[in-house]
Amino acid sequence: MDSEEALPPDVSVVDRRVGDRRTHGDRRKRSIPVAVERRSGKDRRQGERRRQVDPTTCERDYNDDEIEFMKAMDQYKRANRRPFPTWSEVLEVLRALGYRKVADPTALPGLPLQPQAPPPAPPAPPAVETGTPAEAH
Image (cartoon, rainbow, N blue to C red; front, top):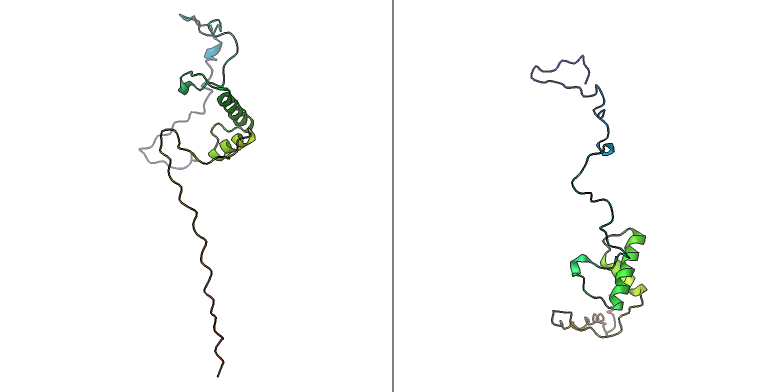
């Protein structure tokens, strides 16, 4: 807005471009004593961190196939920067591990087996006339 333009009397303008508001310095560079130092790193667990454990699964013991699958998914997500892969991508990882569908479906855990509907019958061929075409008059 130009300073030459007239403003209505009920409007006030505050110009904050006068100076730098960050002149007080960086708080992080000050040494302020704390009651408990939590950043020492001494309380952390020693040894290899177990990345394959999902905290929502309550630290259960996984079998070798489950660990292989979790590591493969973790590797896929990191390599492709996909923290939440689609189901198609999960299926790609399973196929890359060598899994193939070779047996008839069984019941899903906790669900009864739903009978599969038979494949739809192919459409009937169009009717063919057996007579001779009518002669033109």
